[in-house]
Image (cartoon, rainbow, N blue to C red; front, top):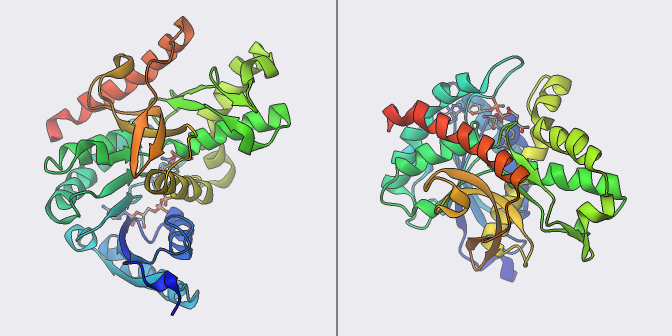
Length: 330
Ligand code: NAD
Ligand code: LMR
């Protein structure tokens, strides 16, 4: 017996377990990419009744990987069974946007799912469960789940903006020819939607200012911002399906950094606002954070210039509208 088998397993609930994101995500969780190479996990998988057969196939494949860290795995169509004592809950299951579908259609189709799942988390999950919502519209789904779980700490409900953050990192690395690893202090404000604002004003590479290094305002406005904002749509157009492996990777990194720390680096998480930057309290908003000791801390008091105020205002308005559209359900 190695020391790796001696830590108590962590219970990780994943919804949408038969879907395409889960098909990347589950194997990486079970291999130790998310919680560490010495941390056993129990996977508690949720999907709809009609998807149970497919989930059984995924479980067969998980078994066939013979992952030493996979202490147990089971599937269910009952949220209360899936979330029982869960310490981490990754809510992926949702109706994905297909070609030509508007985000507004998604909002209504998904609001009921996240009301029910928030209530189930409230009832049976570990009291310090960390929740990551991936299923779109992710920010508002996270807000709905949070509001439906009044006995759990609101700050434990987060939405995934990490994919947008990684997309922005990649564009900067391509433009500068520098290593992704050296890029610091990037953030993406707001909603995981084309209104998001990828902000490189504070970003540095080995201490040098990224805007000064790039020194190309036209590239910033005409290439960087729209490329990052519309990347999800570009992938749907190209694949005929929404991003999956890169979304799973972002989910792994979001939870990994939240649990194990971001080592001083800024990362972007969608978190309930405490009112900073004039963002309505409670709205789940993409913000720059640093993670340490299992907690995230929002980077405060960054200067907001006129352009940024306008851009943050646009994505904020969209989230306020989404909130208003679901208010009657809460
Ligand atoms: P998919 O259609 O392949 O899989 C979704 C799975 O969820 C299906 O197996 C479905 O049966 C299941 N499901 C539906 N309703 C459910 C419910 N109530 N409870 C449990 N399971 C349920 O979709 P996918 O490609 O895996 O994408 C999942 C979601 O992630 C979509 O909403 C997509 O738009 C979103 N997404 C978000 C990001 C992000 O950055 N936040 C990136 C990519 C995709
Ligand atoms: C993405 O950013 O790739 C997805 O959120 C796109 C989508 O609408 O599913």
